[in-house]
Image (cartoon, rainbow, N blue to C red; front, top):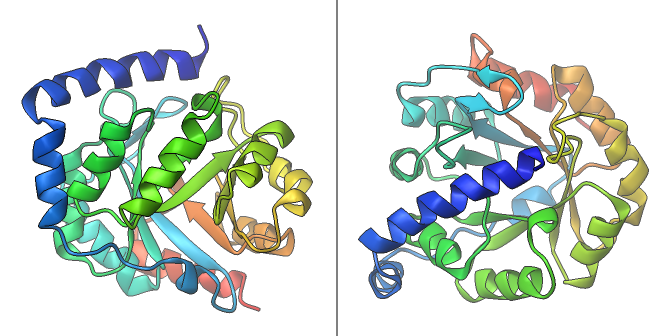
Length: 261
């Protein structure tokens, strides 16, 4: 069993628990009462690089990263530093996240919010919108057959922008074929957790010109953001380097300044 397989096994078990507590009908009713999702693509297409700053307590590769007792306070610092969007991990077993974190961040900031989780069912897409997120992560590696296109279509119907993530040329081709507007290349191989930042450099030329290109993982400092920008990234998603920064507001500003056009 790969690392990803193990994560997905836990995700499905936790999902079953949530589904037994909150029906799909209840989620749909919540969505009807939820303000419309914020538009994010115009922000990402603005001149220069955009930063998605992540609320991330832990990871399978490095264990505990930061305590983060108040996700909302951290999100406010990110927004004040100029982050174009906030990513919130909601997977609980390996990343120590929760939908409660997403709720608290939503109440605290008015910038777009990405729900970062392992989305494998339509229920989770409804759940994402019901909790106020504006973006949802769809990982090609975990979505077989037509499921990627189905979930992408459902996200659009709910007003969500899908960040469709790839790690290989084959996955990138599937993302493009599905018509993704926002395509991420993850430097981390989720089946092994190994990181190779040059994967973005190799795959970026194949990202459709109409799509927004996102570089994910492997950022340790401003120089990495600048390099991703040189390789064609419109957006860089940063987690560990920000949650471990003593001053996250200044860290976001430094990342933006390093890659300024």
